[in-house]
Length: 235
Ligand code: DC
Image (cartoon, rainbow, N blue to C red; front, side, top):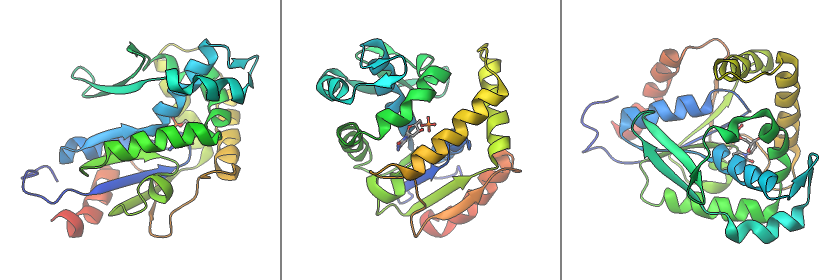
């Protein structure tokens, strides 16, 4: 998959699916192998949520949607490549917030923020601009259905909720966060329900997406799986 990327036709790869399925790990790895841009759109919704928490639009877990909508023009999101991580970090108004957006507090509020039409309109427009020249792997919930309905390759990822909770638990504990497995499992189940049932751009598999259940697959297994799908598209 790595060789002679330069002369290959560039395509758009959309990766959607449930929370904590390893979408970003999968998408980042494909992008690195193809020399494509990788964008984690969940990080963008998390960044807006963090801003709302820090600027009083969410208090005691309650979102004031009108207040957040009024603030949207002040929220400037950017990605900058971090050579140490080999991936892009997300910035809000010039501040690197990569660590701050992955807390359970943000996770608990992000579904409410991502169900606001004005928030989605702003972020989807940014995402479409980033993918204008193709050569991009983008992961989220509505990439194959709304952001890039014409993407050449669409993947819909899923995994057993218990496996997903364990993975997220290990990840947060490794970062030193005090969380319980039960709290994470609850958050994942609640977000699955919220993501699938919101009125605007709910999480659903695009008709032309291929399903990847990675409950029992390593990243290497997943790279072999995707290489097969890519062969007819980029040679
Ligand atoms: O991928 P993630 O768990 O970091 O995403 C955080 C939340 O953002 C998720 O619960 C739903 C929302 N989201 C969305 O609505 N649309 C996207 N394209 C990406 C994420």
